[in-house]
Image (cartoon, rainbow, N blue to C red; front, side):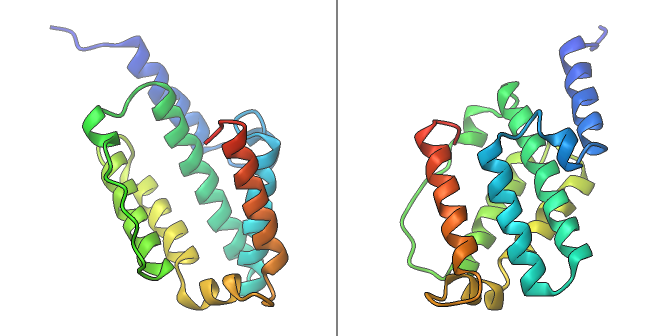
Length: 165
């Protein structure tokens, strides 16, 4: 029996195309203005914290690629009910642990859907933003990243209000 599926082929083609299109202008068709503003603030936090423009760009590029691919998989109903069924509980653990847990859940979710290279991107993004020193500076009430955090939170609130996330 031939296992050819034009839907599967189209999805693979879309993911492949997305892999090479992580520039800001080409991603605009997949990411709205609010999400773009959040990504810009995350870039600024990363750049200011690390002092490394190249690293900050790479982290955000990986984040964009992963976010767009996961959105594509979700819109094409590629995740089973079991994969999407995540227990949500309140945990007072430090943010680093929460991000590590989110990373692990995300890797489990996309395990059979994305390549090891994409898994590496997920690890890169989460490892970068779960750095305890970065998180401490990000959440300091009078810290250097307070304005960025405020803008990120406002953007996330808007995306939730709009039903985007």
